[in-house]
Length: 232
Image (cartoon, rainbow, N blue to C red; front, side, top):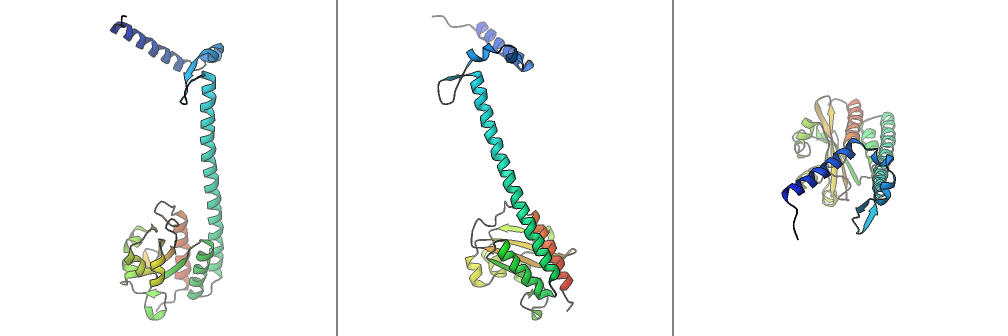
C-alpha cells in the first residue's frame, strides 16, 4: 500500500488552509448552504459525533452558562457593596452625633462589631497614655510596628504576626484572633492612630479583599477623632 508523497501532503495542507481561510473570510457561508450543516459531523468530547449545528448550539449554551455565572457574581458584588455603603452611612451618622472623643470611639466600636462582623475592635490614638486607655505614645509597639501603614496610607488585611497581634489586642483576644484588618488613621499627612478589627475566622479578613471601603472607613473615623481630640 503506497503512502502519500510530500507533494500530496503539501497539497492537502494547502487545501485545508485555503478552506479555513475562505470560511474565515466568508462567515456567512453556511447561511447560504444550510443543508451542509446537517451532513457535517464534528467529534464530540464525550465520544461519537454530532452535527455542526448541534455542536454550535452546545458551545453557545456553554458560553451562556458562563455569562450567567459572571452576571450572578457581579450582582452579588453589587449587593454587598450596597450593604457596605449603608453600613458606612449609619456609622457616619452615628459619629456626627457623638459629643466627645469617648463617644466617637464607643460608636465606632459598636458599629464595627455589630454591622461589620468583627469580633473585636481596637482604636489606638497617638498621645499621652495618661489621657486615657485608648492613647499610646508614638514609639509604642502598637504604633511603631505599623509605621509603614502611615507611609503607604493603605489598610493591612490578613494574618498578623504574633508580635503585631499582641501589640494591638489584649492578651486573650490576641490568642484567639485568626485574621485582622489594620487601618491607619491620619490627620492630613500626620499619624493620628490605628483602627484594628479582629476575627476568630481565618478567612474573614484576607489580603485579597477590597480596601476601597476600608479606606473610606479610615477617613471617616480619622475626621471624627481629630475633630474631638482636645490638645494636651
